[in-house]
Image (tube, rainbow, N blue to C red):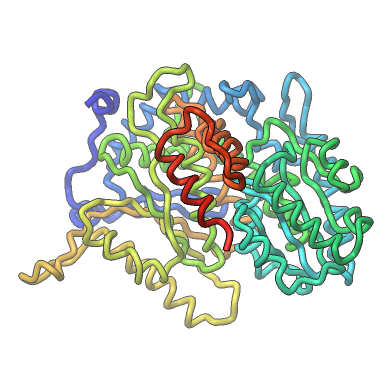
Length: 519
C-alpha cells in the first residue's frame, strides 16, 4: 500500500506482556513530564529505535518548521488565507505574536480585561442566578466542557446552561424553570449568522421580551461576535459586545471571549490559571525542537507520532479517550471536534489527494461508566483500539474511598488491556491483551491542568496534520450540509412542487414530512 511505502516504520512485534517484562526501566524511559502532566506511553508498541524512526519522519515532514511558521503568524491556514494564533490567546502580556507585522497580544489582553470587568460585575450582582450560553461547535463545546470540568471551582450562586442544538427541545429545556429577571444570555457567533445559534437566540429573545418587554434585551444579553451591525440590530448594546479575530478558529477559541461563560463561572483569577496552564504546554512544545528541526526531545511530538504509527502503519482508525473523572465527561466530545474537524481531510494543503489515512475517529466516556458499556469490545473485540486514560491523584470531593476505587480501575484497565489473561482452555474467558494505552496523570483537576490537557491535544493534532500534509485549520466539510439545509428549509412548510432537480430520495423524504409535520 502507498502509505506503507511512505512509512517503513514497524512497531515492536512482541506482545506487550513480553516487552514490559523484559525492560524494567521502560516505564521510566517511556514517560515524560509535560508541565504538570505525567504522560506514560510504556504500554505502546514502540522501542527506542522505533521512536527514533518516528521522530525522523517528523523531522522529514517539517514539523518544527511548520510550528515555527504558525507561531510567527504566517498564514498556515492556506485555504482560508489566515494566520493561526490560538497560542497568542494564552500568552502573557509581555509576549509577542505578530499578524501582518502587528503584535496582537495587546489586543488579546484588552479583550481579557473587558471579560474580567463583565465577569466581576456578574459575579457580584445578586440579581443574576443563571447564565445561558448560546452557540454551537467551538462556541459551545469548549465552554460547556470546561464549565463542567471545573464545576468544583464554580460560583456558588450561579448556574450555567448551554444551548447549541437547533432542536427546540434544547432551548426549551434550558429555559424551563428560569426567571427572566435573573437570567443573562451570552450569544456566541463570530458572524452572528450561524443558523442554529441565531434561531436559539431569537427564541430566547422572545421568551425574555414577552415577560419583561423590549427594553430588557439591553440588560440581559451579551454578544461575542465580530459583526457589530448585526448585534446592534438584534438589540444588544455594542458596549456589551466582545470581539475576537479571524486567526482564532472555533475549536481553538475557548481561550478567547468565547470562554466568557467559563470566566464568569470560575472567576477571572481561575481563568487566568487556565490560560497559564495552556501557555506552560506551549512552552514545552516550543522548547522541544532543536535548531536543526529535530523533535526527539519533544514529548508531545512523541505522542503524535505514536498516533501516526497506529493510524498509518497498523491501520487503527479509532482512538478512545477515557477520563477517570466524571467532571471530564464532555472532554471526549470536545476532542472529537478538535481532532476530527481538524484532520478529517482527504486532500492535502496543495489540493492533491492524501497519501495516507488521516483523522482517527475519537470517542469515549468517563470511567468507570465505559467499563460497563464498551470495554467488552476494547478487551475482546476484533479491532485493536488505542486508549488514552486520564486520571488524577487527588479528587475535587471528600469521598477518598470512591477516588481510590476509581483510580484502581484506571490502573487495572491499562494492565488488563496490555497483558491480557489466559482463559485456561475457555476461549470466552481469554483476554488476548497486547492492546495499547497511554496514561495521562496529574495531581488534581484544576483550571491549570485542564488548560494543559487541552493545549497538549491541540499540539498533537497539529503535528499529525503536518505529517499528513493537510490544513488542520479549515473545515470545509461542514459547509455543504448547511447550504442544502438552507435550500430545503423553506420547502418543508409549503405544499408546492419541489424545485426541478431535487433528487428522488430527498423529494420522497420532504413529501413524507409535509404530510406529517402538523398534528
